[in-house]
Image: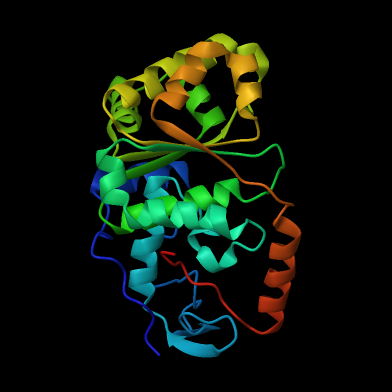
Length: 276
């Protein structure tokens, strides 16, 4: 059976973007003609039939299409683990919360035009906040919008690092300010001794996006009250001006994910890189 086609928005990376990825990732998959992270160059792989988690079928592997999708997601900041996950992998998040995120993705054009941001919060680790944001970003990418994701600590490191190439710093700065949809993971996990750097990063990134009506998705283990107490009214005013706060309750999904991964291995299944 042939696998689903890549979305039209999935195109080869520009040379500069490919070079940046290769520099940052020495083990980057660079040639689908000689290797494949999905079929291992056997030509086929087994996975569930579309829309099912019961029926297993054998797919013909389009190694080049898998490579293009993999590179496209990496360039946006989506790692391989999340590249292989879809909506069906959300097993512990309440259906009403998932529905809100799916509806945002379904109406992405309208939500992005209106600058509607999202803060996914829960004091519980592993509740599914990051997975929801990654799936949302993948769905928005598939609709042709420019998306970029970063860990908040990585953003802080970039703000404080010495850039060898000023033009590279400017490129990154423009990207996080002007991309259609920005994802920031693990807000509030930084070292509290860096509060001045945090405030500067928030001011330069979030304020510019709010003023431009450019939406941002944020995940955090902090409650709204803890954000208010830890960063003050200025940060909360930035976040609440255009963002809806969505609690993601529930236990960690990671033990269940481990069970599923073991079961998939026992059945000889291979997760392909997928959109959602």
